[in-house]
Image (spheres, rainbow, N blue to C red):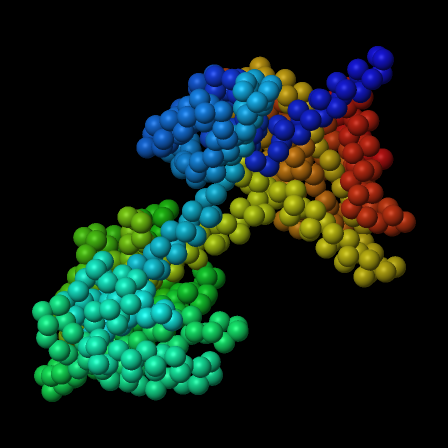
Length: 599
C-alpha cells in the first residue's frame, strides 16, 4: 500500500512539473473564479509573477481596454456553469501587448456544482497579425476598385452583386448598401434585355473565353445608360461557374471622357499588377528591390528611392533605389527632417517640391545625375507607425509633374508598400520566434533536436573520418526553491543571466539551447569530452562567482550542475548521447551540486 501511495505521489509530482513547463499558459481557479495556480508559460505571456497572479490578481495582466469584457465573460461563464472562451490581450509591465486565445472548463463535482476551473491561454499574435494583413489587403483592393475609372462589379451565378465600385454607384445612382446581394435583373436591366443577359450567363463554360457584351442600365432617376462590358469568369474544379468580374465603360457619351477613362483603366490594371508583385515575396532583403521595380512599372519616374527609419538611431537610411541614382546611394544616412523624404516623414503627409542640386540632402548631392527634378515624398505608414518614405523624381524639363490621378495612386502604392514591409518584418520575427526561446534568446528544444539530428547525419556520412562530438547537460541548482523564495521575476533574471554566460563561453559553431525549465544543453562539434568538461567547468565557476541583480534590486547567488558525455559511435543517436550526459548530470547532483561530472 505504501509503494502505491508513493507511486501516486510521484505521478502527481510529475504531472505538476509537466504543467509548470507546458508550452501554453495554464491556470486553475476555485469555484468563485479566484486563481489558485498559474504555470511558467502563463507568467512568460503576462510578465506577472505567480504570486501576483493568485486570487483576483490575474485581472491586472489583462489589457485595460479588454479587462471589462474578460471580467464580464468570466463572471457569466461561472454563473451559467459553461465553458469560457474569448480572444483578448495581455499587457506586460513593459507595455508590450500579447494577443491570446483563452479557454477554461469547469471541474465538475456533478451536473450542477463545480470545484473550480482549469484553463489555457495560447499566444495568437501571428494569427491576429495575419487577419489584420488580410483586412489591409481587402481595404487596398476596395480602394483600388473605387479609383478605377471603369465600372467594376462582381456577380455570382444567380446574378447577385458581390462587389460594386464607386464608378458603378455614380453611373447607376444606387449605393453599394442598396444593391448588395440583389440580382441585377431586378432593377438595373431594362425588362426587354433581362432574358438575353441571363441567357448569355447560362452559356458560359470553363475554358471558353466570354464574349464582350453591351446592354443598358436603368439608373435610379430613370435615365437609360448604354454600357460596354468585358468579363472574366471563374469556375470551380467541377467546371461550375462561381463568379464573374465585369469591367464596363459608359459609352452613352463616349466622346466626352474617353481618354480620361482609358487612362484610369490602365492605371487600375497597373495597380492590381503592383499589388500582386508586392505580395509575391516576404523575404525582407529581396522585397525592397522587388517593390521598387513594381512601383516603377506603375508610375514611371526618372528616380525612385526607398528611405526607411533606423529604429536604433532615428536616422533615415536609403535602403533601395531605381533609375537615375548612383548605386552608392544605398546605405546613405540622412539626418531626420532633411530632404523631401525627411519632410514627408516628419509631417506624415505627401510633400511636393521642385528641387535643384543645392537642395538635395548633402550626402546624396553628388550621387544624383539630374541637376534639378520635380519630386514628391510619400510617407510609409502602417497601423499608425511611420516606417519611412518613398521618393519619386521626374526631370523638370519637358516632363509634367504628377497629376491628380497619379497622386491618388501614390497614396495607394505607399499603403501597399508599408503593408508589404510590415509583413516581411513580421514573417522574419515569427520565423525567429519559431526557433528561439522567448525568455533567454537561446535556441528552443524543437530547433535543438532537429539541428542535433542533422549534426549526427553529417557524422554518419563522414564514416571513419568522423570528428569528435560532445554534449553537456546543465541544470540550475535548487531553482524551484529560488523561485519560491524570491519570485518568478527573480528566477527569470537568473535564467537570462545564465543564458548570457553560455553565449559568452561557447563558440558560434556550438549548438546551445534551453532544453526546458531550468535545464540547458550544449553540443560541441570537433570537441572531446575533456574539452566539454573544461567548458562546463568554466561556466560553473563563472556563475558561482557572480552576483545576479534581481528586479527588486536585491542580489542573488546561483549555482549549476552539469554532466558531460562524448558521442558513442556504437550508438550514435540523439537519445543515447543526451541520456549519457543526463547520467553525468545526475551524478553531479548526487555529489552535492555545483559540480561537473563527465561519463
